[in-house]
Figure 1: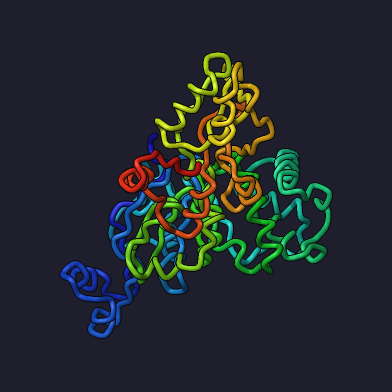
Figure 2: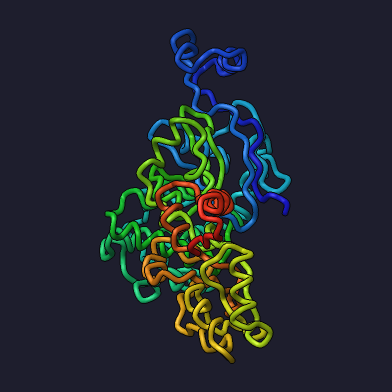
Length: 415
């Protein structure tokens, strides 16, 4: 997939001698030394990344890390000292003022933390403001503004004024204003930072819902790691103007790049970050009409399992346990269906681990199914606890070998 946005080796230095400061920076001088020697401030240092079409790319960092400077360079509000900012094939870092205006009108818009609504204009007029700038007719502006407001649940407030709305509703108007122009890229600079926690979470959920429908290319700026982990397809963590790590939420939590990132993720609820498919295993199953209790038991022992899912064609018939099959294999004429447990836990692959507690508590392996209810994997209840604690799963083969040496009997690991 061709990236929608490419940032290549971008630097931004504030001051009246940026080129001299840039040379010192490239020579290895620190930001502190450069400021003390020249009075120049390094805002962003050698930032490079890509954002694919339809992706939410979150830039996360503390105050002063350079994230807001970076996002303003993406639409030309601030020109880089060096480097390229490519939207498709347009370099907004070096294109003409005329072409920059065209790119802004045609491809990109921005949603700020402070709503910046016009108090004397109605909600619909505020939502339509970007369309007015583009020269869209009044009737068409109204229709597109109402459509955008309906997407954020505010169509009934179209003729109200901003003062009549709560803070969360005003931010929805700001979001609707961004959506009304149908931008290809949406830049969001801490858009929910001024909201109280409950409203902020509602807006996060609203953005996730909208993104599933609209599939916009979004660069989202935040200082809140929980927000970054919730929203981002990929996350870039900034410190002192530099990127210290770029990756998925799971990559960053599981493998933090250094102590700085590790300190951020130390107290993160891993159950919200990881989902069933992260711990699901591709384990064997048996067919109901092709296996007996004895052959199913042999499959369990060969694969070191304490339970197996039984399939009836492509559908799940149930699950059988080692203990039940051991009893059934001693009975004449026993069939595999006689040992079936037909009430078994099942989840979809995207289910967060913190929602698996109930399913895992039954002690049975949890079936992971796709949209057509086909078995695509199995989650070991112990794997859920291991992932939540940050521990690696035990090596089942090693455990078997050690126990075999002591007892001479196979030890079946729990599934």
